[in-house]
Amino acid sequence: MIELIHVTKRFGDAVAVDDISLSVGKGELCVLVGTSGCGKSTTLRMINRLIEHSDGEIHLDGQPVREFREEVLRRRIGYAIQSTGLFPHWTVERNIGLVPRLLKWPANRVRERVEELMALLELSMTEFADKYPSQLSGGQAQRVGVARALAADPEILLMDEPFGALDPITRESLQDELARLQARLHKTIVFVTHDMDEALRLADRLVVMNQGRIVQQGHPIELLRAPADAFVESLLGGEDRGLKEAALLPVSERMSPLGPGPLAEERIARDATLREALSVMLWRHVEHLAVVDDDEVPIGELSLRRLVGARDHDA
Amino acid sequence: MMRKGRSSRGYGWLSPLLWLSLLLSACLGMEGLKGLFRLVEPDSQALIYDRADFIVLLGRHLLVVGVAALLAILLGVGAAVAVTRPGGRDFLPLVGQLASIGQTFPPVAVLALAVPVLGFGTLPIIVALLLYGLLPIVRNTLAGLEGIDPGVAEAARGMGMTGGQRLRQVELPLAAPVILAGIRTSVTINIATAAIGATVGASNLGDPIISGIVNGNTAHVLQGALLIGLLALSVDSLFARFQPASSS
Image 1: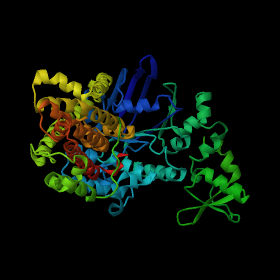
Image 2: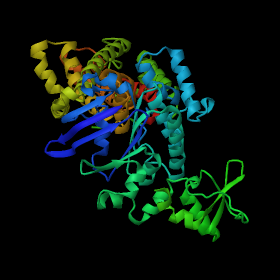
Image 3: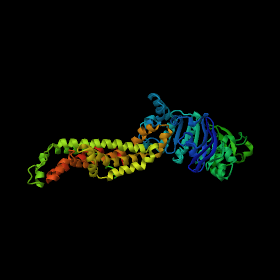
Image 4: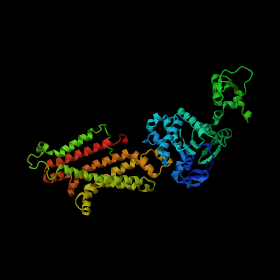
């Protein structure tokens, strides 16, 4: 678990991070969002001491980060960045095995771990192990970057806009992959992004920063329903907030049990989002959808009225 | 002076072998070119320089350039590495300027100043070549180290590599092509410059040239120049062979 207690960072006279306190629990995925220059990257980099904080304390499992030797601290924390930072003169296999080798793992254990990670990130060992970073696509390189960050099985993962340079389709597939990995690995992750959809999609806890301060933090749904001020509201998408919230809620939350009448023709999966359901309604010009489970068996129905009007229902 | 050597053109071993064999045959078989030199010096008795074997002069020439290059590499790369470390950053402009001054200072002047201190012989010419050859090495090492992708440098730090590990495993290997280009420029220039060593008693391939000038024997001048030119081409093509294509 990571704790920032009244942390400030000054560069000369400029204050980049202004007295912030933040606690990220074990297994939590905390996303820092904000406009460029709001101090979110600086905050992230103070945790592994790539930047030293000026005031306050940063604790890792109760121990101040300053008490660690820099290298020892960083080898305990996975780190992935937008430009991947893969070493261009090393093969994929060697890149991924970097931190385990720094930790002096025996060669065969490093090799096994690399194989394990490449399988986890769906990179074929035979195809990619001996390739160099310049031979990879952006998405593949970022997968390797994530594999490298996970190599020594760190408790904590810091990710600085890791998917920011990818095309929208690759970005979404990597976001899904990260969500899938996180459901399995339960790392403590601090993730920086300026892409609000990405933030809403991944965050257990969303932290909005502006001008070096934390403006609001909480679960994405909480922030969407009650933004603290106009800045948070506009960052969260203003008029688009309804759609963004709908994108976070599953159909199963608003569906009603199967009625006696005839079943609607159009179908939607139980774990699809309300946003997807709304889109199907708009597209097909219908007001009712049949909700089906994974085996395409109808288990309920969703009306437009329930989809949009159910706020008082679940409150 | 940031001459980046021409990049290797994919001849493989062909071009270095060609130049080396021309160099050696010229060294050993200068007699065979007598007819050619007769054209420029029709009346000379001693048509071919014979105060020392060309092959011996070649060896001494290589030795002087080699020792100077080795010292220049140690000093130049060492200084450039030192001033790109966190502790040495303040000295970066100073080192750049010192290296530039080293090269603007004519080697002949260095010789004139060094001889009273170091005496005649090989030592002053090594000092002169060392100073003259530093700039391309320092400049290119700095350029190579500073030119590393900031993302790569950041990742190396973020992954928990120590300063020494970053230098040996990341920075130097990535800067190597640019550093090598600097060494190539430095060595090639110094092969030609070393000839002036003959004026202070360092016997090398400059001997025939200086003695030819003194005795008015153009044939001797040409013989020295021919061998130095072939040596420079041989060494340059060897560098081209070993320099990775990614340097440019």
